Image 1 (cartoon, rainbow, N blue to C red):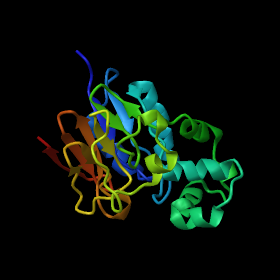
Image 2 (image 1 turned 90 degrees about the vertical axis):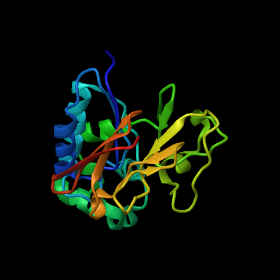
Image 3 (image 1 turned 60 degrees about the horizontal axis):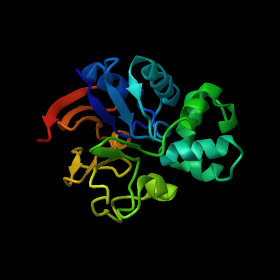
Image 4 (image 1 turned 90 degrees about the horizontal axis):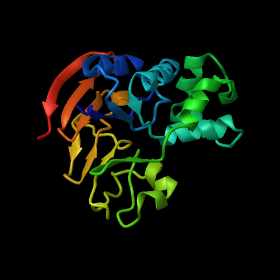
Length: 223
């Protein structure tokens, strides 16, 4: 029997929420997990989140997506500009969680994990990106700034030319519910700003949620 396919929304350093989700989902070796990025920033436990991601990749099939916050951290680690902007954008909490003052001091194994994250992942029926997409371009030609930065608040794309259903994060759904447009589903439900962390099974639509303190919320079924 093939395993389950499960997407996980933006974690943002909230390990308690992630641990509760994983306890509910109970990933098995035959399952495929697709975390949608933004593992770092804003929350209090980025190191524990990245440690958990590394362990999780040894337990099941996992295809992690690179988020815009992850990208900022990698740029700074390699000497890029923008430190002050990053600190005000959630980076201060990341450095505090490591007990350091410079992104260059973040452990190499965590940087290697982030550098191994994907731009997108696709199956015969779905594709997974962090933020958004251009509907008329193949996935391998999509601009990185759209995949990682474009908010659905300002532009909701039309269905993708591939006909596949898009699973995205990045744009917080302040009501704590999955945004379901049929051809696009957004599962960032704002764990860092009082909402839950969300995981969703594909294609059944089964949903698991937990808040920042790790309290599990009721399951839903999208269908």
